[in-house]
Length: 94
Image 1 (tube, rainbow, N blue to C red):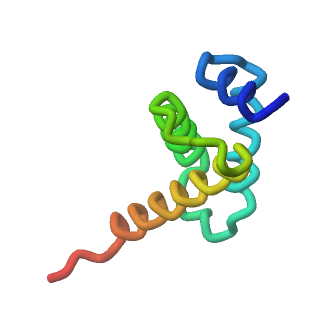
Image 2: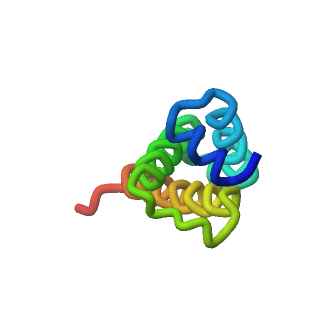
Image 3: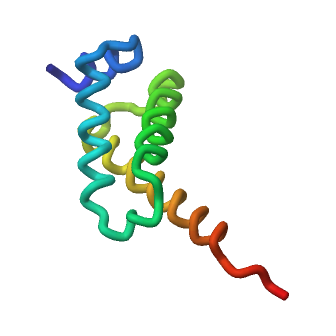
């Protein structure tokens, strides 16, 4: 399956394409030891939503492999989630 076919299937709600995208997201989430502070299911859901929105807006221009793009978006989502968690759990300043 080409990247273009995978993208079209994912955007249109194809089960096989969705499973492939989520498996790539999950690989990144599981490979990051520091990501234990965040809920993996939340990161997967947030990343999936970001990808869907970006692809519907056609902001991915196929300049890199789709898997690489997914990995990059997942990593940024993990970093954002980790920062939010750190800020949320920080001691209040008195």
